[in-house]
Length: 70
Image (cartoon, rainbow, N blue to C red):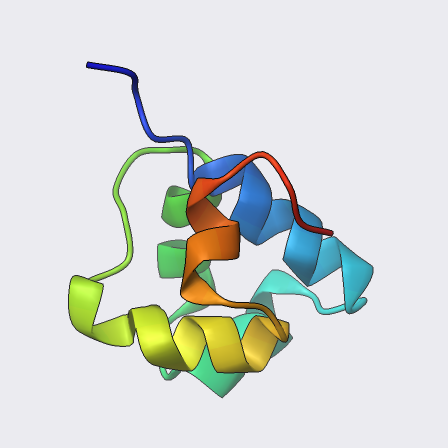
């Protein structure tokens, strides 16, 4: 089964919107440390956060799991 790499996509979208980890964390309601862990593949966002995550990043949920995007 191929590994799903959401971490680089979160980081790319965050950079695209010129958001710091702190600013992005505030928009998401999580700590900057949580954002850092997401982007380093140490953990993943809770599945219930995915719709909000996509809205904040201005993308579709599918874009976070596919090669296309930013």
